[in-house]
Every structure is written in structure tokens, then in C-alpha cells.
Length: 610
Ligand code: F6R
Image (cartoon, rainbow, N blue to C red; front, side, top):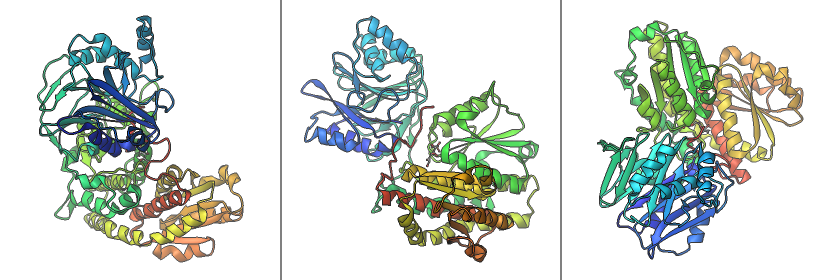
């Protein structure tokens, strides 16, 4: 959802901006631009398309200056084009603005500015900000930005520079992420950590409504009323190497292979004396015994993790779990139903997803205590939730999630086990076995990844498909939602997930000769049922790829065209292994089709608009 970066210091600014934008391209990549000062003039250079187009346009331009701002765009207002790309300027071209977010009242502001004789050149909402800052400017950029944001409705992370005060960047934030990197004789702003990791790991996290004035050797932060705010720096615990491909062809395949370590780290961060220690979410036994239900709210793959979590928690803790897509939950009419006796959980890899943040705030406004599962320390969700469980997936750069999703699932297994233990739904023996099984997952994942050639071969045969089906029952159905999404978003092949028993109620009409049906069946009590569903689609000409655990393989051989297996484990944990072949399948299919695997079309990693 757009990436912004800004630098003020002693270095030549262009390589810093372009390097930072490269690290933020996962946030948006339909156009990019930079603004910097050269020969006493504001230079603004923008190009439609990938950052490489901007690099090409810049050629061997040297900024010869040490202050600038840059932007990589995911279009909201106006098609991707050179003109709509950021930075945007006022008419005189001496104020430049980069923006992430949506100015909801931009039409009204634009009409007002037009009535004052101001001419607009782009279709964007952001251009109003540049003209407003100019309109408000009376010799102090910070004051002009402060007056401007008072007029804005919607969300924004802003970086603003002006020729008139060429030693400072003014930044502001509301409902869109923005961090300030604290350097030595240099300071930076960025939408996300990767853009600044090369220069510093110390940051200030701006809060909503705050404005920062940043020079090379000073950072001042102000609240909405203009009072100075004292903030403690936050130290990022990621390494710059995590933002590099490290020999892999894509971040996606690198991150798929990082899952054993991510799962190990997420688990071991909570294991104490053979028990899962969830003191970080601070729920007392008394509180857990009192709850009547659990609400999970999230978007995309995090929502899929929530559905999988529902099956796990209901299975072991015997408590009802409802799962909602955040954008639906927040607009439930007239308002979402929440009981004080419900535990509320939000899940978000980035911790910045606008709809999930809104759902969290909605739940809190109704008096609920919110537990967040997120991967990004210091993110909005991590800071606003009452309790946060951080996954230890490490930096995830590929737009499609892999290790983010599996570590979210793992957290839900842990939460489920703790609730089951506290409510007396699990005996000590069952609990110990559960914990032992969880600890086996990282090594078993490695074994699954070792068989990746098998999946690569399947992808090489099927990458021409236009339509595929992913079916399963129970927890396998939950997993297939994620399997299908991976294929869709990475390779652009249309794929549908269906509860296996539901196919015959309509969608089976789409099965033709050679239609690929991926059938997942890892749960012993459901195997015969899934085999019946496999027979139904086989009878209509489908090509069936079944996946099960090693010990159930034989049962599938007669009716399936291909049987894939994951190593044996207690049924409840098998989906955690089964997701890997589907991630690999989406990946290799996309590679064979020549798709841009790390940055699929139309997508952005951090969805900071609703
Ligand atoms: C799919 C994917 C998205 C995200 C969704 C929520 O591969 O990555 O569906 O899961 O946009 O993002 P977070 O978890 O950051 O809230």
C-alpha cells in the first residue's frame, strides 16, 4: 500500500532513496518517484512501472544533495502513470510530498483549492496535500503541515520537503505506518523497517496524529496540539541480511524454506520446562474458565490461519470459536455482536492491516480485551492490542505469506492447548503428547521440503491449467483455503476451495475432463468420506492429486492419479506439514508461467487501506 522513504544527512541522497524503495517495493510497485534538491531547485523524477523504470529514467543523475524523499506506489486514486506517481508538488514546485494512505475528503478539499485558483495536474488525493501545505505556509514547514493535517480526513503517512527549508523533512502519521530511523549525523523516515535497516536499527515509532521535524542531527516530535513529545527509541531485532535473497532465486522460496526455523523459534520462545508459557498474553486461569467463546478476526491468509485455529481449538478445548474476515466484522450491522465473556483474537503478520486494526479498535471500544498474534514488533497492532503474541517468523518480504501463516497457526495451536489445559479438557498425558508433537514439526517440515522436486514436477505438468479445485474436510478444508490462495495469487490460475462434501451441491458442474482436483485427507475419521468425493470427481474426468500422511497412502492409490504424502504425525498436526507442498506448488507453477513471484500483480504486502 505504497512505501515512503526519506533521508537527510551527509550522503548522496539518491542511492539511499533508491535502495530504500527497493526494500519497500513489496508495498506497491506500479510507479515510483523521488524528489531531491539540485542546483537550488526541487527535482522531481517519476516513472510508471517498476523501480527499475525510475532507475533507468534517472540514468547517471547525481543528486549532489543530501535530502530527499521517495515513494513506491500502489494506486488508489488515478491509474498508474508518471503524472499520478508521487512525489506531488505545489504549483511552484518548491514543496514535495509523498503519501501512503487515503485522503477521504480530497474531493471537497480539491474543489475548495480549485475555487482559490489552484490548478491540479494529477488525479490523486495526495496532490491536495502539496497545495494545502503551500497554502498554509508562512515560513515554517512544520506549522504548515500541522495546519494541513487538521483539514485531512482519512489515513496518511506523509513526508514533506521544501526548497525554502532545505535541511529538514516533516513527517506525519495517522492510520498508516511510519517510522523514523535514528542515525548518526543522518536521519531517515520510512513506511517499514527494511528500508532503513542498512543505516540504523534504532527508530522512533510515530503514533497517530504526531508530526516530526527531522534534520540531519535532530528529531523533534509533536502531538496533535503541537506539544513536544518525548519518545523512547525502539530497537529493531531484525538483521539487514534478512532483507536479502541470500542466494535464493526469490524471497518466496527462501521464506518457504525458512519455515522450520521460524516454527522452531516461535515455539521455543514459549517453551519452559516442557510446558507452553503464554504469560505474554497474561490470561489468568480464572478468566479462561469464565469465557464462553472465542472470536478470531483477520484478513487473507491470517484469516485462513484463524479458520484452522478454530478447528484446533474447538477440537482440543471444546469451546466455540467464530472467525471473521476483518472487513466484514467491522461493518456488521448495526454493530458487531460481542460478549464480555468472549476472548477476542486478531491475527496479522504485518500488524498494519487497516481492516484488522479497525476490528481491534471496535472490539476494544466494546470493552473486549484483545490478544494480537503478529510478526512485527512495534507495529500498530502490536502496540494497540492489550496483549501480543509475537510470531518469530523473521522479516517476510515476499508479498504472499508463507512463514507468516504457519507461525500464526502454530500460535493458535499453543493458545488452544493452554485453554484446553486450563479448562481441564486435556489430561496431563494428552498435554505432554501435544507439546511433544508440536516440537517435532520443524524437523518434519524439513523432510517435506526435501521432497520439493516431486512438487516441481507436478507444477511443470500443470502450469497451463486455467482452473483447479482444492478440496478437504474439517481442518484439511481450512488448510486448503490457504493452499488455493497460494496458487491463485502467485500463478494467477483460478482455483476454488470447497469443503469436499459440498462439491456435489453445485461446483461439481465445473469438473471436466482433466480438471485438476487437489484433495487433502490427513484425518483418519474423514478419509473414507474424502475418497468418496474423489470417486465423484474422477467419474466426471478429474485428474486427482491426493495428499495424505505416509501411513494412509495405500487407501488413496486406487482412486487418485497421484498420491503425495507428508510424514506421519498425530492427525491434528498434519495440516501444518501439508501446507508446504501447496506453497511449493503455487511457487513452482508461478515460476513456470514466468510470473513475478515475489510481487504478484495488483497485490501489496501491507494492506493499509480498507
Ligand atoms: C496472502 C497474504 C495476504 C495477507 C493479508 C493479511 O499470501 O499474504 O492475504 O495474509 O493481506 O495481512 P496481514 O497478516 O499482514 O494482516
